[in-house]
Length: 415
Image (cartoon, rainbow, N blue to C red; front, side, top):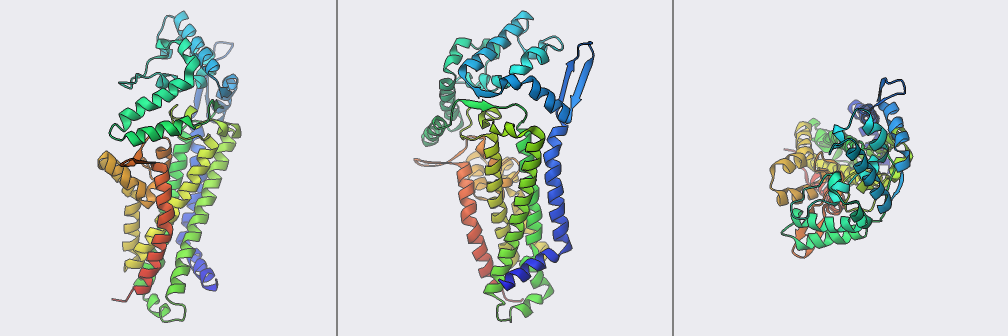
């Protein structure tokens, strides 16, 4: 324990460590606030003047206008919203809401807009996937809204995973277990979670920078040659170095994630976290969670991804002779999922991005997008949803890479 405390003190005494930790916390709060600055609303007041609202004022205005749409999303409420939408557009002789006269959308359509989310997707053509306009939907068919959604996930998976009947069956089974009817509490958008993902990726990079020189700096300076000759200079010291780096990284991510979630939910309203994921993303999203639960799951999965990535960086550090080499190698593996997701073929990219330690918080390929997506790892009759594969891989990689890092450190010999 004493050696661990000394190693922890050594890591925290570095000026770069404190700079990166402070920067991570500042960026976490900033990324929580930024989505609010992009909110924009406009309406015409009683005097006929156009009023433009931005930021928190816009959020407050739209939440007030859509207050009646809050609550349980029953088929009856969806049908009523569709009928209001169709009647409004018919009365003005248009087929799309953007053709309505100025001010009409804000007055008549905006209050029911949350209930219209996913309606077009639910009634998409099962063969082509093309969604109809709301004007083309028969309101009477909405009485079986959730049955239509279950049929939609079956047709969607047939297009998404045509060569994997196991994945198709698994997706249908998962969606049937999703709690219905959904709930919606206006105020948040999917952009908020995108920024949480960016926060996780940045904290990951900072933690890798902190962990990269843990072993290699001693090799480079020659200090390790002396420490290795002491009583606890091999296994005990190696284990202490690993745990110190993991502790700092884990504490940094937990602090940043908590700060980010606290600021976001305070700005947009804690009641918004009760919104079903399906009412923010695809109406046939496979997970039975609300936004608050998704925030917490991403924070937990992001923590595992950071710890797995730091463990892997420590392995690289134990094998590299210089800090620059270990840092460069660690950063390359951090951005690898982003590059692979854009360049590799579909199935291979899915497999690689599911097992790489940095995938959990990766941009474009992270667990947030996996949870709201429909990708499975198929192996014969076995189909594993990619978010569970990512989490499982990180749980295995943390002790594996940590053990290999200590083992490599103990076997290191000066050149």
